[in-house]
Each structure stands twice: as structure tokens, then as C-alpha cells.
Length: 156
Image 1 (cartoon, rainbow, N blue to C red):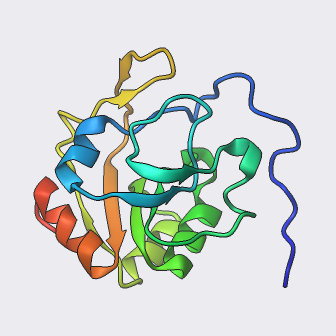
Image 2 (cartoon, rainbow, N blue to C red):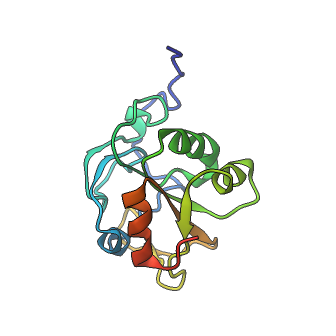
């Protein structure tokens, strides 16, 4: 077994520029329950799941199981996307890009939907809604998860 170094040596005590929380309406539309949120903020979250990995838990180094939700730090998405594809069961929200990680998504069995970008306002830690200036995509692996994407638009 390969032991990966912890990405975060100290607990997260302040918010970061990556702290944009997925709005509740996304989860309402999906109608899914997740076993694990692998990149959860340290504060309250809208993700309907049984367990949350925060920065302190280091979701990249911790084991993933069941249906996972992954809205990773967009500033360092490659490792998260790679692990999500390898895991093969869950949903992933990331920005569209010309990166290697995004190419890996396009070449995987994952399917995606483009949620209504006009309606897509993320929650900030202080509960204010916030836009991000990027095209956001929602990906799924696993038959039930892919079917759930249909509630948000045309699955590609």
C-alpha cells in the first residue's frame, strides 16, 4: 500500500478562495444521497450524505467508499478528478477547462450536464450567494448517478 503525504499539515481555520459551496437546489434536483463528501468545507454544507471529509481529513489521502460527492478545490483539481474517475461511483462538480484533468474526464466513462449557469450561484461561508466566472460542469459515474443528471439538463 502506498501512503500519500497529507496535503494539509494544519487544520483549516479560515476560509480560502476555493470555498464555494454547492447550492442546495443541485442536490434537490439530483435526488441522490451520498455516502461520502470527499472535499467538504469545515462549515455547514448542503450535501446530503453520511460522512464528510474536511481539509483536516485530507480526502485525497483518505479511503473513498460508496457513492461520493466531490466539489474539489478548483485551484488543484487534477488529483481529485483522477481519484474520482478511479473510484467510479458518484458525482463531481468542476469548471470546464483545457487541462489534462478535464481531458481525462472526457476520455472516461463519465457523463456530464451543464447546469443552468444563470441560476448557478454558489454559497460562500458567510451564506452570501456568489457567482464564479467559469463554466461549471456536473459529472457522474455509475448508472443511477448518470440517470440523476437528467434532472438538471441534457446528459452528454
